[in-house]
Length: 160
Image (cartoon, rainbow, N blue to C red):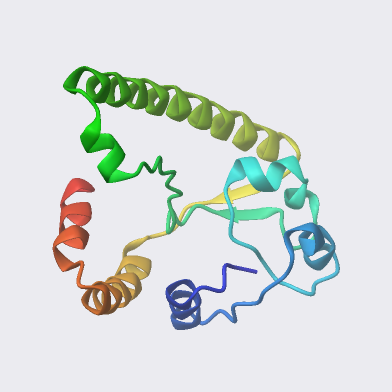
Protein backbone atom coordinates (compact mmCIF):
# COMPACT_ATOMS: atom_id res chain seq x y z
CA UNK A 1 0.00 0.00 0.00
CA UNK A 2 1.45 3.30 -1.04
CA UNK A 3 0.46 6.70 -2.27
CA UNK A 4 -0.79 6.48 -5.81
CA UNK A 5 0.69 9.69 -7.17
CA UNK A 6 2.57 9.24 -10.43
CA UNK A 7 6.15 9.47 -9.21
CA UNK A 8 5.53 7.42 -6.07
CA UNK A 9 3.81 4.63 -8.01
CA UNK A 10 6.56 4.76 -10.67
CA UNK A 11 9.24 4.43 -8.00
CA UNK A 12 7.65 1.40 -6.36
CA UNK A 13 6.95 -0.30 -9.69
CA UNK A 14 10.64 0.01 -10.54
CA UNK A 15 11.57 -1.69 -7.25
CA UNK A 16 9.44 -4.66 -8.29
CA UNK A 17 6.50 -3.83 -6.02
CA UNK A 18 2.91 -3.53 -7.15
CA UNK A 19 1.57 -0.26 -5.70
CA UNK A 20 -1.95 -0.68 -4.39
CA UNK A 21 -4.42 1.83 -3.09
CA UNK A 22 -6.04 0.90 0.23
CA UNK A 23 -7.99 3.34 2.38
CA UNK A 24 -6.10 4.27 5.55
CA UNK A 25 -8.95 3.02 7.73
CA UNK A 26 -8.84 -0.37 6.02
CA UNK A 27 -5.07 -0.85 6.09
CA UNK A 28 -4.89 -2.79 9.38
CA UNK A 29 -7.24 -5.46 8.02
CA UNK A 30 -5.51 -5.47 4.64
CA UNK A 31 -2.15 -6.14 6.32
CA UNK A 32 -3.62 -8.71 8.71
CA UNK A 33 -5.47 -10.62 6.00
CA UNK A 34 -2.64 -10.51 3.47
CA UNK A 35 -4.52 -8.33 1.00
CA UNK A 36 -1.38 -6.21 0.94
CA UNK A 37 2.10 -7.48 1.75
CA UNK A 38 3.38 -4.23 3.16
CA UNK A 39 2.73 -0.53 3.51
CA UNK A 40 4.90 2.55 3.56
CA UNK A 41 4.64 4.92 6.48
CA UNK A 42 6.49 6.30 9.46
CA UNK A 43 6.76 4.75 12.91
CA UNK A 44 4.36 7.18 14.54
CA UNK A 45 1.51 6.67 12.09
CA UNK A 46 1.65 2.90 11.87
CA UNK A 47 2.30 2.35 15.59
CA UNK A 48 -0.70 4.47 16.59
CA UNK A 49 -2.97 2.03 14.73
CA UNK A 50 -0.94 -1.09 15.60
CA UNK A 51 -0.10 -1.89 11.99
CA UNK A 52 3.16 -3.35 13.30
CA UNK A 53 1.19 -6.04 15.13
CA UNK A 54 -0.25 -7.49 11.93
CA UNK A 55 1.10 -10.48 10.03
CA UNK A 56 2.45 -8.29 7.22
CA UNK A 57 3.37 -5.29 9.35
CA UNK A 58 5.82 -6.60 11.93
CA UNK A 59 8.93 -6.37 9.75
CA UNK A 60 10.07 -2.78 9.26
CA UNK A 61 12.74 -1.71 6.80
CA UNK A 62 14.08 1.80 7.19
CA UNK A 63 14.39 2.92 3.58
CA UNK A 64 14.18 6.67 4.29
CA UNK A 65 12.75 7.06 0.79
CA UNK A 66 10.25 9.69 1.80
CA UNK A 67 10.36 12.71 4.05
CA UNK A 68 7.20 14.57 4.86
CA UNK A 69 7.25 18.33 4.54
CA UNK A 70 4.88 20.85 6.00
CA UNK A 71 4.36 24.26 4.48
CA UNK A 72 3.08 27.55 5.76
CA UNK A 73 1.71 29.48 2.84
CA UNK A 74 0.88 33.16 2.69
CA UNK A 75 -0.24 35.44 -0.07
CA UNK A 76 2.94 37.07 -1.39
CA UNK A 77 1.29 40.43 -1.99
CA UNK A 78 0.01 40.51 1.60
CA UNK A 79 3.45 39.60 2.92
CA UNK A 80 5.13 42.21 0.73
CA UNK A 81 2.67 44.83 2.03
CA UNK A 82 3.74 44.24 5.64
CA UNK A 83 6.27 46.41 7.39
CA UNK A 84 9.80 45.09 7.77
CA UNK A 85 9.10 44.62 11.49
CA UNK A 86 5.97 42.54 10.77
CA UNK A 87 7.86 40.42 8.25
CA UNK A 88 10.58 39.86 10.84
CA UNK A 89 8.00 38.79 13.46
CA UNK A 90 6.43 36.29 11.07
CA UNK A 91 9.80 34.92 9.98
CA UNK A 92 11.01 34.53 13.57
CA UNK A 93 7.73 32.92 14.67
CA UNK A 94 8.00 30.41 11.83
CA UNK A 95 11.59 29.58 12.76
CA UNK A 96 10.53 28.92 16.36
CA UNK A 97 7.48 26.91 15.28
CA UNK A 98 9.64 24.82 12.95
CA UNK A 99 12.14 24.05 15.70
CA UNK A 100 9.35 23.05 18.11
CA UNK A 101 7.57 20.94 15.49
CA UNK A 102 10.79 19.07 14.69
CA UNK A 103 11.48 18.46 18.38
CA UNK A 104 8.00 17.00 18.87
CA UNK A 105 8.09 14.98 15.63
CA UNK A 106 11.48 13.39 16.38
CA UNK A 107 10.41 12.70 19.97
CA UNK A 108 7.29 10.93 18.70
CA UNK A 109 9.37 9.01 16.18
CA UNK A 110 11.76 7.79 18.86
CA UNK A 111 8.96 6.71 21.23
CA UNK A 112 7.03 5.05 18.41
CA UNK A 113 10.07 3.10 17.26
CA UNK A 114 10.68 1.94 20.83
CA UNK A 115 7.03 0.83 21.06
CA UNK A 116 7.23 -1.10 17.80
CA UNK A 117 10.35 -2.95 18.93
CA UNK A 118 8.92 -3.61 22.41
CA UNK A 119 5.80 -5.06 20.76
CA UNK A 120 7.92 -7.54 18.78
CA UNK A 121 8.51 -5.60 15.59
CA UNK A 122 11.72 -6.34 13.74
CA UNK A 123 13.68 -3.43 12.25
CA UNK A 124 15.89 -4.11 9.23
CA UNK A 125 18.61 -1.94 7.78
CA UNK A 126 19.39 -2.01 4.07
CA UNK A 127 21.73 -0.50 1.54
CA UNK A 128 19.84 2.57 0.31
CA UNK A 129 22.00 3.07 -2.79
CA UNK A 130 19.74 0.97 -5.07
CA UNK A 131 16.70 3.00 -3.95
CA UNK A 132 18.54 6.22 -4.72
CA UNK A 133 19.60 4.89 -8.13
CA UNK A 134 15.94 4.22 -8.97
CA UNK A 135 14.71 7.55 -7.60
CA UNK A 136 17.16 9.92 -9.29
CA UNK A 137 15.99 9.41 -12.91
CA UNK A 138 12.34 9.68 -11.79
CA UNK A 139 13.13 12.91 -9.95
CA UNK A 140 15.05 14.25 -12.93
CA UNK A 141 12.18 13.50 -15.32
CA UNK A 142 9.63 15.24 -13.08
CA UNK A 143 11.99 18.18 -12.47
CA UNK A 144 12.35 18.67 -16.20
CA UNK A 145 8.60 18.44 -16.74
CA UNK A 146 7.99 21.07 -14.03
CA UNK A 147 11.06 23.14 -14.95
CA UNK A 148 12.46 22.91 -11.42
CA UNK A 149 15.86 21.37 -12.13
CA UNK A 150 17.67 24.08 -10.14
CA UNK A 151 15.47 23.49 -7.11
CA UNK A 152 16.03 19.73 -7.23
CA UNK A 153 19.78 20.28 -7.39
CA UNK A 154 19.63 22.61 -4.37
CA UNK A 155 17.70 19.99 -2.40
CA UNK A 156 20.20 17.29 -3.35
CA UNK A 157 23.13 19.53 -2.42
CA UNK A 158 21.55 20.30 0.96
CA UNK A 159 21.32 16.58 1.71
CA UNK A 160 25.03 15.99 1.26
